[in-house]
Length: 527
Image (cartoon, rainbow, N blue to C red; front, side, top):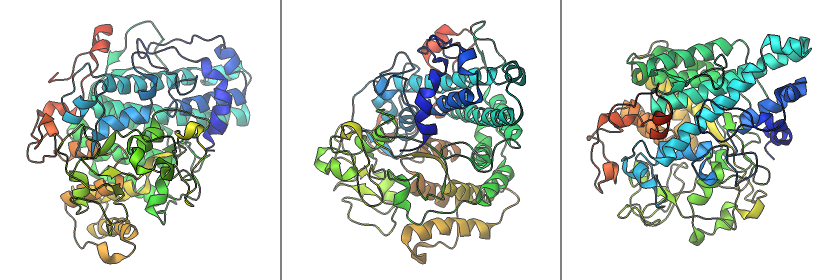
């Protein structure tokens, strides 16, 4: 079992559960548990914080068939499933065979403002921000004093507040990165009074940065498993600064190096075996993962998250039991040929000196999008422990693999890329050392070491290290290759050989339903 605050501490007193998202940020509690009851004790505050974290790993309070969101199937409304689709299916890494609404638009980069999967991600992020805002409204010094919560209890709740602000900053980063100019509201806005105002991308960058810097003195250096720490905040700052030129037009590579270096000096180390980072017991003896979204195959049943990644990556012919899901195997997602080609693989997969090459199949070429076996399957995530024993799973389908949001290698590669982009405070020698540490683990020795670096090297290394972890679209946008015709992959732009598309599509459209509901919003260019 993956802690998850002891699986949300009995659903976290339901946290004054919110209704389905119809007006996104203007949500009101609908259950009978009032805030004065839910927040009446220090223990209650921690239980509600557990629900804040839990909203990242569940779709709703009623199990696998429930959803906090309206207008989208519960099974597809999990944050990681939606985020994964947006970050992977639109790139040179992943393809999906399913003809579900919105899928092929992502495969082909032909998405519109009516794409249901993008709308679901947008709404999920706003929903989680709404939940956090409500928690923050109930956690002010005045509210604590009115409830006679003082001393050490109040100090603990101040840490909870910092963690909640981190999670909100993360979700605003997601919206800024994918949608550019989203609606914006904080705990200081009254619920239901006016429609949220729109914030420009560059201004949202400043807000996220200021929030992360403000909570730095309050966040703990170490915390319970699955909770935010200073290192998670530093990692998000490094990511923010590395992409600053995309968000604001001004590079912040020196700052990216500064915060990557803080993470590197923060006591983390590489796991000895790369493959063990994506198994069902990756919460045990894992010195590398900085923050994860935690799943449990018996207590957090959800058709998204790592349950989705494992089952969609295999079919019945691949012996699902060996992946820890004896009744699973949905046959949905596999690689575009460009991903295995980065490992030097074309045709069938046999073996590879780079241990990160975890694929299955005998055909890497993508002749037909709708054929699951047209492309190697990525089998990086497995619902088994290091001994190969399947994790407990209700129905033989649900998975207990925690999904890493931040790992130490990101700090290494951020550092190296920022040095190559001219950032100060680092060195090329140190950048080379960091890259080779990853390659030495991958190869098991120094045979894969490199003696020089280029930006293209870094982009390829990031694909090898982070494929199937939701990094790729952001990376390709930063490198100017997401829409550009100079870098193609199968079915880019809806053409088998690939084609360039309009640069405006590097930002997703705001959902048409929200534009209709909120007159303060203006659609992104190109849609």
